[in-house]
Length: 255
Ligand SMILES: O=C(O)CCC(=O)C(=O)O
Image (spheres, rainbow, N blue to C red):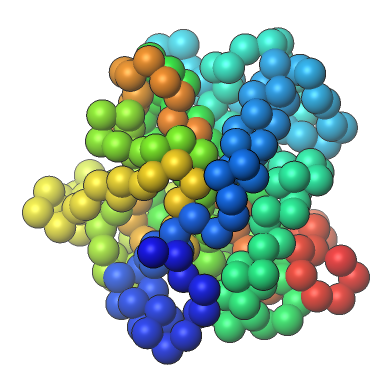
């Protein structure tokens, strides 16, 4: 089922559970075009100044992930993360979908910027575990804490392909670590196995995530990639805590 209206029921579910399944909001062809586009970017067939690109670790250890910098690192499908996909017209059009406009209007207001428009990849036969964390703005170097991310599966996501795991309702526990990752002690308290669920998704399915929801993801030993596109939306007044700069606009004034 696809959500067409972000009404009272949808909002209640989002605020209670910390996530809301939106369904597939564009055609199969449009999803396929995003998949091809990101592969073309990884293979260097399409380049944009300003994209940052990060290869997956060679070892599967989080601490070994190379830096996410502005250079193209060679034609390979083994990128872990690519940022600033708003520079690409297909991804920009997707992230400005009318349903996302309605959701962000309700949760944020008319003027909306983005912290990141990010490709996340568990390449075929590899991937690096992403530990339990909350997406907290202070830890990201922002002057406030955004609450709204829309994550879209570009491939089906299953436990065996390293799909996300979340702890429903955990966004209501407050900030466990403003910097990002959650301590082992807090994991034992808040991310007990019986409270976690696998956030499986079909290809093209979008999920609205509360930024403070505890989440993590695994590795992908299957022969197919597990790709996703994730956009953190925020109030256009949000600033970089160090420089005072604002962020690229998605909706509203000055887009
Ligand atoms: O897709 C994943 O594995 C994780 C994505 C994530 O952490 C995010 O979108 O905030």
